[in-house]
Length: 294
Image 1 (tube, rainbow, N blue to C red):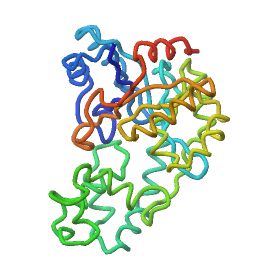
Image 2 (tube, rainbow, N blue to C red; image 1 turned 135 degrees about the vertical axis):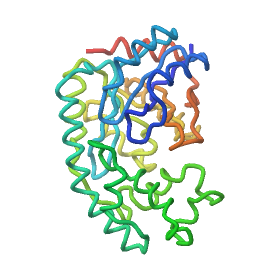
Image 3 (cartoon, one colour; image 1 turned 120 degrees about the horizontal axis):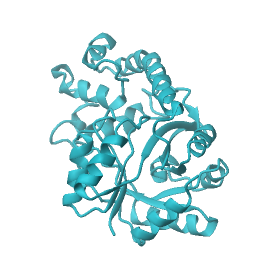
């Protein structure tokens, strides 16, 4: 059995493909079960369930939540949640307000780097009710000819050393936590998000932990104490060594382990559907996840 439990559709700010197209693509790749886990919204799940019947792909109702913990941003996957819950509708509204407040300050920080960008111009590129994001900001920066020779921008432009995933790489280097463009946001605390997922019948799994803990495996004990049910041990972001270490931690501590590509499409073009390097029986992974539902 082949599964991919972390896929983003066009309902995510950085996803490319419509939900039904993703389900068709998974069917063509012989992926048996998939999760559309969009950022802070579950609006695409009903469409995914319909497309799953059409294309013969099992759909796991899911969402990915932005949360705060230990002074960092952690992404929490909620599997088998009640996607019609008012909790998740409020999350989307609250997030929009947080980002609209933070981004003028982020842009000031970017301007201080000597990069040409303005809040007014950036705001004009957003669709109605679309929350601003670092990836969209990076894309606007790259498209501005005034930045084409800037030493901090050229590595991300076509042919540059970081052009494989330019928007994501720019975020990690300049806009993520601890970087000079970063502005802290008061996201939902991880502990509260875990409770929210469980309250809505779901299974809370920490997404791509390798990208969140910064190589500090000592954080895992504190993360476990929040009540998470498990880790996305197998991720396209992890090295094989990280996959092994996360898998061992889960088995040693009675936690679930899952696998997901975090596929987005053109925003992260080096990631393919089903690419998560799982070494474990994927039918068993899905079976354990189902058994943990609230």
